[in-house]
Length: 189
Ligand SMILES: Nc1ncnc2c1ncn2[C@@H]1O[C@H](COP(=O)(O)OP(=O)(O)OP(=O)(O)O)[C@@H](O)[C@H]1O
Ligand SMILES: Cc1cn([C@H]2C[C@H](O)[C@@H](COP(=O)(O)O)O2)c(=O)[nH]c1=O
Image (cartoon, rainbow, N blue to C red; front, side, top):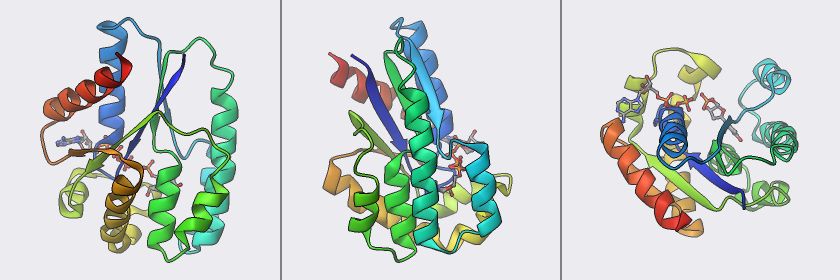
């Protein structure tokens, strides 16, 4: 049965690095078919978000939900895959858009029809470290620095509420990968 693993965390926390390393590990060592996907998913919606800007949380929630619907429809055709690693999922909307002041419960409601992940790993890192790791200005990152502290707090609240596995993402890549493999393997047995 196909499993959905969500990797969450603030910008620069190491989600893509971990997702790709997990794919390599589970394909080579466990002979599983692994798909890594990323949100935002659709180039058209990314362009629209860039055009309308990043300061209206209601509009962002709806645009990201539309993006997610396209993402999930695409995934639903991937029948031959064992493990799908989601590099961001709907918890990103709950954390980022509620950090801008929108009601968390409403964001949850908008996202309530999407499939629940089997497990979620949160890469937790102070924003100063995350910022140092980011070398480009993708998605107006500089404009969002101020709200990232809040986003991190929201993620930590969600971790308690939903029982995420939290990894200290100030550690090196190898250690983070080791911890994530252990979490996922414990779940798969
Ligand atoms: N544990 C780590 N220690 C030091 N550097 C790291 C670590 N993990 C990732 N990096 C580096 O930090 C940068 C950002 O990593 P990555 O793209 O994986 O983060 P991300 O969470 O996917 O970011 P974004 O949300 O902005 O897409 C990359 O240059 C990556 O090599
Ligand atoms: C899915 C999703 C994303 N965001 C934000 C989070 C990041 O700042 C960008 C995506 O950039 P990345 O470098 O690819 O991580 O979009 C959001 O605010 N809400 C969402 O639902």
